[in-house]
Image 1: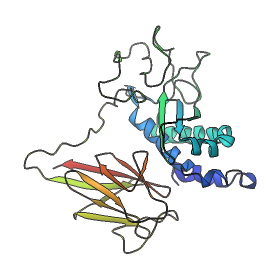
Image 2: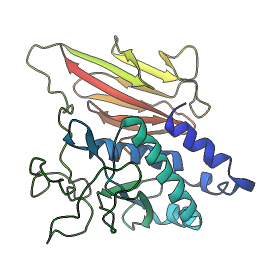
Image 3: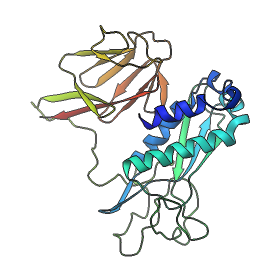
Length: 283
């Protein structure tokens, strides 16, 4: 069973339906959980062959209505989200510099249903690593403690960049993992291959369109009660796009609720409680 599914079941199983009101909000906790997984993946820093460090301190910014619905449960929800991050990191063999914390904050510039995740790698204040974390030191002297800064490199590791790469948003200032996949740039005359990955299974996109849904008539069937019979459609091209087909629960693309979005290599699509990774490559 996937980490997100286990997280969702833990929430649903809490005593006396504590989270009944939470699930009525526009932003679903499982969507936030998926965004935290992406935040770990996008900001993973490889320090050596045996150690990949990911952020351990997260802020989830919510619209005012969503924050008001979720804030009464913020402590318990934060603990559950932190546990989900720990489970996901164990699965991916990530490590941390300190204890995992997830905080909810209100953002006045966000509309209902939208959210933003910021993160940082924060060393343990006692100088001791959290469970599952390798050794590490405090942030370099003089560096602000704000979110978006690279973690401090351990002794003997290659030097880290002094500043976030140009053009990266302030909340995502970490270097990309070594060997990561940048968005594919079509070469003149080259043939682009398209596929999606669901729970580790690859589904080739061999036609111009691909419909995902719970129906047996869908091109890719997703057995998920939160997925509609014909949930959404991917159209390949330059660029490739995804279109919601009037589904009940909608789609989330790279952390944003939407009905239509442009896709890039590595885009993460959440339908129901299932995460779909879109891929494209030359050759």
